[in-house]
Image (cartoon, rainbow, N blue to C red):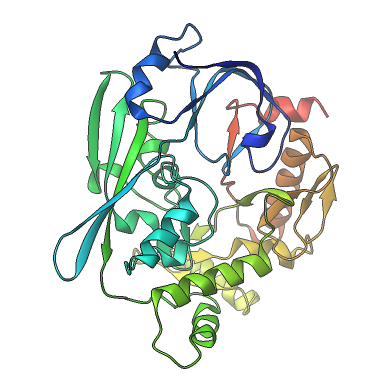
Length: 352
């Protein structure tokens, strides 16, 4: 019998540490027990929340439905040829632990995504990315359970509609598919991706003159992230709070003329990605605080729970930053984390 906890505290299950409770909570450790969840009186497809590591969600209020924590474990791999290997991981695997596993096995492709919080099952939803690599570029397929047909379905890379911090699972498939496992194709030979920030310098320093390896790059990424980003276990946060805005080449050129130090990253489609952290920092907002929520003093892209922040504090701070950047640069910053219950930010502000 599936064990349910009623009126459950969700504070430990969101890395920002916002206080909220769930009408009911259960943990799924074996995907074969999925049908048991559907038989629970508390289950409703339109209100159930399938929760991974809670690193990309913000609770604005108590959750009135059933919350299911995905904790399924298991990793397997199969060699394709001398160049490539297929690796499949269950949805509940901790993302960083999974990346460390692939590096330890000599598989390359995910090392730039080290130390990102969350689970494997959540990675395709957001199409997580860092240091010039997006996870979608390495995903071959995503195995899901269709809540409508009550059958398993496998989505190919193309089916997933990966885009910048976006996917099928955030759009047309939202609320319909439960991700069970993710299949990756990785390289058995190290192919470095070092063109982002100071990654190349740090990785080469760690290599100490020896041949550069995926392990060295992974360690370099961890080292850089630890110096810039707060540990959510010590200071609540949801990682990068804003997406790097993408603009057209004309706007980017105009901004470059006015702000020559603004980092810009040309995209394959002719558009240009701007550095959101730089924009926020230029507005003088590092350390800026509203209530218990603050902009991190070392990385302006991260908002932190500095002193028992409420959801209203976080929303107000987020909007203040958006307004400041919009006024100075004419650029709108879109937030990354998902607010739950959805469409509740207005209610948060009304409670201020």
